Each structure stands twice: as structure tokens, then as C-alpha cells.
Image (cartoon, rainbow, N blue to C red; front, side, top):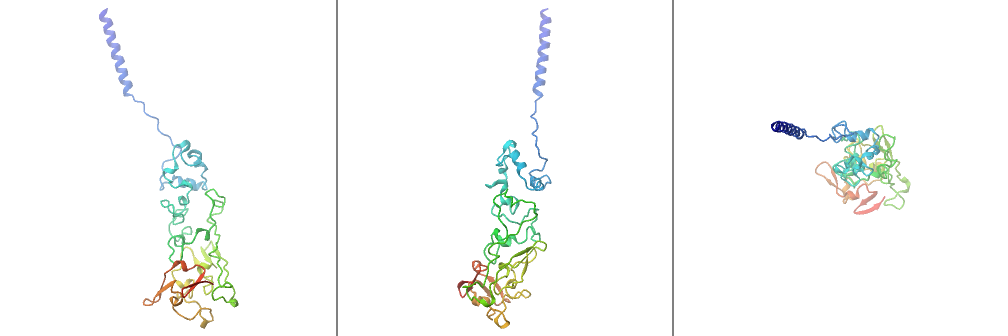
Length: 302
């Protein structure tokens, strides 16, 4: 009997040991982490990239805020948008959609809303030439062509009208040959620009900064996407066909002296290399396209 009890005890212990061993080996794994997004949500090259989803939702960020909180700091999703959008405005920063995502100070194209980077695209065009690499004058402010929104959700920012609205500012409308100005001539009247933009052709006309001024080419029409803006002085001054910057002279019925060299009178604004078929260089951008005449070093209004 004693041996029988010992035998059954040994058998039971063996069964319990094997059962415990099996339990230890059968490790319970963690439940997989679920995501409401498809793969590629943070991959810019994926069709599922969240930027594409927001664009397809007409730039409505409320869906993002439902999970990531109104401040985009994580919310119920536990994922902060500031991990990638590191500027104070986070996902609503200007350069998130316009310009260079890696450079918060570059808030205008290249890189238009459709991803375009070529200047032949209207969403890109000559933005850079006006705002950051202007070789002919000081940088042009965004509000010279657009009404700046008061934040991302401003009704004037995102609306049902395709494309950016053009709203010309003070520089484009600057009047010349004004009473009391330098060399004012009442007989020829004031030159008061009436700026316009042709959306179909992508062209500007009747703007001060491209020729609508005294002694300028009043009929100059400049392309935002295809013309090398201002590379030929005659575009705004003088002869558009030849590029000669000399305006119409007294001898030809105009109002400009007959001297052929711009730097003779405007030496603090422009210089000329007479050895290379009259190549002009702007030497002081603050004194060019500023609404004033700089003659013999004296800065006067028109």
C-alpha cells in the first residue's frame, strides 16, 4: 500500500511538472498595436501620406484634431504632430504647405500645393525671384500680391475659389511724376498704375514695378512663369525688343535726356561695363524700384 501511494504521488508530481513547464513555454504575446491609418501615413512618397489625405479633405484639419488634440500635441492617439512639425505653429505653419518644409523662413514656392517645383508652373513661377533672390531691388513682401490670412483657419485663406487670389499692394500701385516731385512735368500728367493679373496667361500688366512709371514702358506685360523677369533692362525702361535701357529721349519726343549711359546720372544705382556691349549692374538695390529718382546722388521723388 505504501508503495502504491508513493507511485501515485510520483506520477502526479510528474504530471504537474510537465503542465507547469508547458505553461511557462506558452508565453502570452502582447496584442498588436492597431492603427486607424493605412501604411504609408508618414511617408511623403506614399499615396496614403497624411498630407495627401488632408489635401483631399480640402485642407480640413479637424479630423486630425479629433485624435491628436486641438493643439496637435498627442490627444487620444498619443502621437504628437510636433515630432515632425517642430515649429511653434506645428502642422499649421505656412511652410507645411507652401515652400520649404525644412526651412520655416521659406514660406513661398518652390513647392506649390500640388508639389510643383518648376518655375513654369503658375503655383511656383517667380515667387523666389521676388521674395528671396531679387537681384534688382529689395525683397518684395507677400502682401504686394496677396492678402495675408490671419491664421490657418481664416475664411479668406482656404475657400472654394481655386488658386491664390491676387490683391495688389502699394508698390505695384505707386504713382510717379507727382506734383512737387523731382523734374515734375504737369503737361504729361501723373502715371497712376492700374495693376491687373491675367490668370489664363499668368501675366501682370500696368504695375509700377514692371514699367508703369514716368519714362517707363507703360505697355509692358510680364509673364510670371516664362519670362526672365527684369534680366533685360529694356523690359521696364527703353526698348523691349533690343533691351536698351535708354527711355525715349527729348530728341525723339520723349522726356529723358539724350545721354546714352545710365551711370552718368544714376551712378549710385547702376554701373555699366562699357567694354562688354553695355552690361548694366544694379549696385544699390535699395535705390532701384523704390519710387524715387536718384540723380547725381540726390534721391528725389518723381
